Amino acid sequence: MFKGLLAAWLMLVGLSVAHAAEAPVDAAQLLERQQAGRAPLLLDVRRTEEYRDGHIAGALNIPVDQLASRAGVLGVPRDSDIVVYCVSGKRAARAQETLTSLGYTHVRLLDGSLNEWRQRHLPLAH
Image (cartoon, rainbow, N blue to C red; front, top):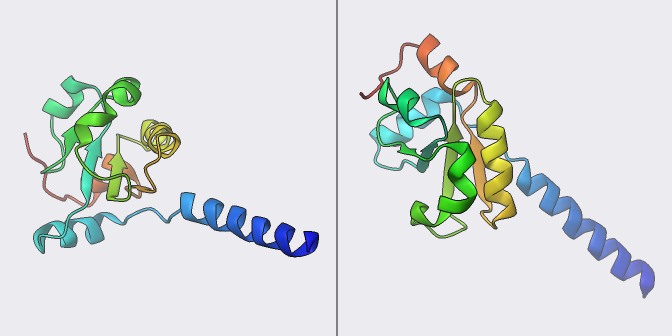
């Protein structure tokens, strides 16, 4: 019986780890989802002045250092799809960890973050 419980527990832990490490979203895939009206919640975790200089259309701006205290303004259920980005991905990874620790279960990074978006010459809002 103990072995069965241990196996079940290990399987659950494995699923949790796999779930937490969802693959990043490709920039073209995100743009396609936006154009089809199926966009996830898009979260820009850069500073406000960086956001004003250009951001991906539809992105909500909450600087990473404020995210834990302002997560309630996301206004989505904790199982909603959320895609997080910054400039290079470092702050986005911190934000992903924060959101996961707050119980959000489908938080993914934008692959290459804003640097990749810009290199592909994809549209920015101002």
